[in-house]
Amino acid sequence: MTLLLKIKNGTPPMRKSALRHITDKAREFGAITRQIYSV
Image 1 (spheres, rainbow, N blue to C red):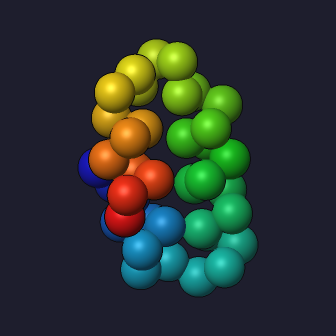
Image 2 (image 1 turned 135 degrees about the vertical axis):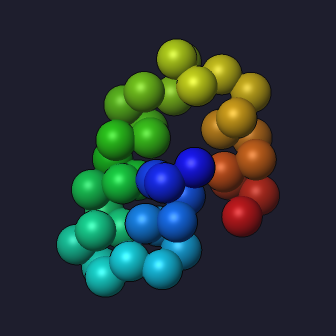
């Protein structure tokens, strides 16, 4: 959830690192990634 908030409200460098972290951990997050991409 904190990664989503960083993407939504963060500065561009924060957004980039949070997106990279999410995509790296996508398999661990599973179905949550569908919700992320709908945001």
